[in-house]
Structures are given as C-alpha cells and as structure tokens.
Amino acid sequence: EVQLVESGGGLIQPGGSLRLSCAASGFTVSSNYMSWVRQAPGKGLEWVSVIYDGGGTYYADSVKGRFTISRDNSKNTLYLQMNSLRAEDTAVYYCAKDNRGPFQWGQGTQVTVSS
Amino acid sequence: DIQMTQSPSSLSASVGDRVTITCRASQGIRSDLGWYQQKPGKAPKRLIYAASSLQSGVPSRFSGSGSGTEFTLTISSLQPEDFATYYCLQHNSYPLTFGGGTKVEIK
Figure 1 (cartoon, each protein chain N blue to C red):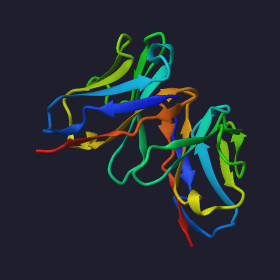
Figure 2: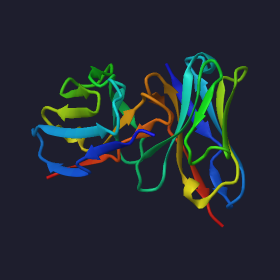
Figure 3: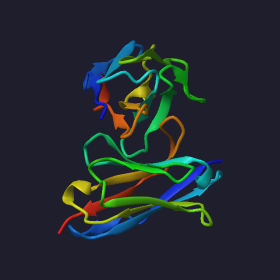
C-alpha cells in the first residue's frame, strides 16, 4: 500500500528556512515523478515543484530560486528545502506521487510564516 | 504558463441532481487534464485522469470529457458524499496549473 507522510512544518519567521520531508512506503521514490503542492488558508491548490525519476526538476515561478526539491534514495524520502520564506508561503504543503499529475497524496504539513 | 479557467466557482444542488463543471485552458493541452475532489481538511483525491479516464475505485456517476481547450466534469446523480470542492489540473506542460475550484454545496 502506498503511503506518504509529510513532516517538518511549523511556525517560521519571514526570511527563515525550513525543510519539509515526505517519507514514502509501498513504492520507490527514485523510480517515480514526485510533486509538492500547497494550499494557502481558504485558497485553492497551487503546484510547487516536481522531481523526475531521472532527477530533473521544475518549479513554480513563485518559488523558483528559493525552494529546492530533492530526494534521498537510501531513505526513500522526498524533501523540499524552503529558503527566504515569505508570508505568502503560508500553506499546507502536500507531497504526491505523480503519474499524469499528482495522484497519491500525503496528509499535508502546515507551514506558517509569521513574525 | 497555461491558465485554467474553471466555472462556476460555486453551485448549489440537491441530491440526485446532475452537475456539470467546466474548465477552459488558455491553450491546447490535448487530453492532459485531471479532475480532483477535496473535502475540508483533507488531501485532494483524483477522480479523472487523461480527461475522461475514471480513477480506480471512483464511482461511475463521475465522468469527464473534452480535449484541447474545453473540458467537463459531470456528476450524473449527486450524492451526499459528493458535496466538496472540485479542481481541474493541466499536466501538459510545466508549471502545472490548477483551476480555481468549484465548491458544490447543498441546496
């Protein structure tokens, strides 16, 4: 059974950094496309980033240059390193296994950027 | 970037009603579109992929159609558990983009 468990969220001051983790089970992260999607309070869904099985990456313009997606094959875990955080990055962050778009989702982790 | 315009943004309907939600892409995306359902406090759930293919385990009252720039999600007979927010997503090119969402409420 596929399971995705996000962690690492919390309250962080503007300009700070945070690393989100997504521990996967039931499949191999490195053999799949994996995405991060976020949802600001009361708002719609926003795609953030993807990492291909081959290692290539793409980012939304809103996070490009500040966020980095990566994975640790030995831990079967996906990461999102978030730097220079802004108030508008406040959201629930979901990781998802991607197959023609995000397909199987974790439960999400809350990130709040506030002073 | 490809813009996805979803309509309506909300609707009120009764159990048993037929419901239709539309997404329009700013440029052609072939059939590279999915439909998602999200309930409050929960992760989204994909209902439809490749514009018209039903995700495994999803009830057959859900259906999708369209290609190119116009797409439709239809719920043939609305059930109590279908009251939720629905989103389309294009995966034709990066950045992936979602529609703005349609909240389906009880009339």
